[in-house]
Structure formats: structure tokens, C-alpha cells
Length: 401
Length: 44
Image 1 (cartoon, rainbow over the protein chains, first blue to last red):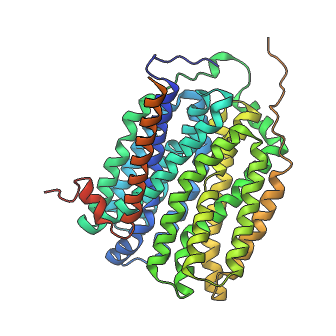
Image 2: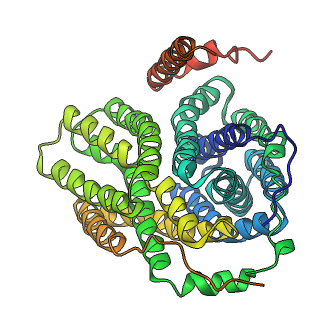
Image 3: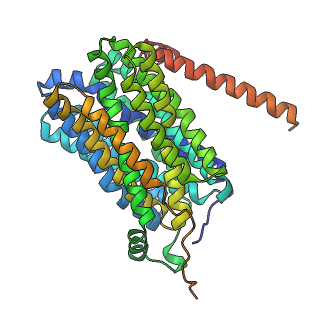
């Protein structure tokens, strides 16, 4: 692997640019739910029409992530990020003009999903991972993850304010302007990574190698559970609290608390991953989620328990990101890190799709979320058990001449 | 840079970050707050 870069493109500059890119891309994506009510009211669409496009966006994001990662590994992250940012901007602008469910699916679902795949974790973490020493890599990935968490926390009220002040169509265009800032920042991501020129392992060989490792499968399914829980809780927790007799304000504050504590959690677990065993920390996160959900279910619902649960879940929210990405780099090396983390992220997005959809389905069928919470606990225990046997040691490959 | 200055600047940075996070947290109940603070409350 060869890295050629100008002197100004220091690891710190790359880390800062990566954080800002993740803040913008993750933050704007997080505002999607705010557009549900105004868009469905204006167009006379059902909530299912809107939800389907957002679910499609999650799937396209996950399915495209391995390809975006492979593009970044093969042709450079800078170009991949710019191309994805253009698709993201186009998706937002055209979404504001979408007049039919089909055009809405193509813009909010497909274009934004493709844009997200090239401007989020798989590609950005790959560049940051390549430019940090093994000792500092987990911390750097934790800081980048905290950047994405900060975006989710900060852009949500900005999106709400823009919709209130200028209407949903102008708000989408203004958010597109924000996403447009990713394109110049991508210059810092152009790290001159040229795996093809250095010989050694091909993409097909890397895929075969990863597919043959149990640890890779454990990481995939652990991330699946992470996606299931975060999508279910973020989408359905506010309704669950209102159904339990609490006010909508309590639900909004719970969402804000998850976002706030998520920033600290991402950083904390990134830092801890650099000091100790990453897979043990993953076991801790998934086990702690099971315990937190169980206690939340057993205690009588009140504002205090809702906010306490939100704070604890916030700490555990995206702590899995630096640990999972760090483990991929640690076990399989940096050469195809973006592609391999993209594949693992597909598991996360499949879980997200199922968590968001199944939560609603269970509620419609049974009139409560109880079964969905039980599934979340069981999955959490399985994810903890799944993470335990992960072999953290780097793979030994025969030396090439 | 002297260590004392480094600690001082780190403290100032942390305090500013704390104020920013508190402001955003408040904006969940008052979204217009952020528009006013970022001068986005008027676009012609």
C-alpha cells in the first residue's frame, strides 16, 4: 500500500475534515422524520408511503456501502466522497420537488441512500484508520464517530427550525446547501491510497478471506442487532412514551438525551477500545443494552425512568461504531478496510430496516410494543454471546515476494 | 506552548463545547433559538 499526500494533509486535518463530513451527512439524514407530517399532508400521501421511502433509503445505504467502500479502496476516497455528496445534494433538491410516491422513492430513497453510502462511516473511517497509528486508531475512530453523533444531535433542531421558518421545500434546499459543503472537504480525504499498485491481495481474495472468518460473521450479526435496536428505539420510543401517558415534550427530550449522551459514548468507547479488548467492550455494550431495556420494562414508566433510559442508551448508542470498525482494521488490515466495514454495515442497515418496520407491525398487530422490547432484549443477549468468541488477532498471511 | 497555557486553552475549549451542547439541547424545545443565534432567522 502506498500513501502519497501533500504536507498539509496531516492526520489531524484528515480527522477534522472526516468529523465535519460525518456531522453533515449523518445530521441531515437524521432530520428525515421531521418531513413526514408536512410532506404527507401537502401531497395527501399515507404515512406508509413516506416510511417506505425512508426504509428504502436505509436499505440502499447498506447495500451500496460495500461498493462505495470498494470504490474508495480502489480509486480513492476523495473521488468517492465527492461523487456521493453530489448524489446526496441532488437527492435532497429533487426530493423537495417530488410529486409522486415513485419520484419520492427514487430521490429520498435511492439517491440519498447512495449519497449516504459514500459520505458516512465505511469510507470516512477507512481514510482515518489508514492515517493513524494502531495505538491511536480506536480513539481517532471514536472521535469521528462522535462527529457523526454530534451531527445527529445538532442538525435535528436546526431542521425543525428551518421547516417552521421557511416551509419543508425550502428547508430541504437549505439542508442540501449544507451537504454541498462535503464536496470541498473531500479534498482532505484524497489520501493517495493505491492498493492495486502495491501488489498482494485482490478484492476477490479479501472477500473470500473475510467470508471464511467466523469473527467477520460475528461482527456482521452483532451490528445487525445494533441497527435493530437503534432504529426501533429512535422511531418508536416517543410514541411508546406518549402511549404510556407521558407528554410529547418528554419524548422529544428523551430523543435529545440519546443524542447528547451518544456523543460522549462514541468518544468514550473509541478511547476505551485503544486501551483494552474491543470485543470485550462490544460484549459489554450489548449486555448493558439488554439490562437497560429489561430494567426500563420492569420499572413503572415515568419521566425520570424515560430520561434515565434515554441517557443510558445514548451512552451505548454508537459506541459500537469505533469498536466494530476498529476490529475490522485490526483483524483484516487497512487495505480493504472501507469495503469490509461497508459489508459489516450492511448488517446494521438490515437490522435498522427490520427494527423500524417490525416495531410498527407488532404494534399494529398486538396494540403494544411489549413483544418488540422482548425481541430487543433477546437479540442483545445473542449479540453479546456472538461478540465473545471474536478472535481479535490480526490474520497471518503468507508473505508475498 | 507552555503546559499551563495548553491546560487553559483546553479548559476554554471544553467550556465552549459545553455551552454549545447546552444551547442545542435547549433548542429541542425552542428550535427558533438556533436560527436566531446563527443569523438564519431572516433570508430576505
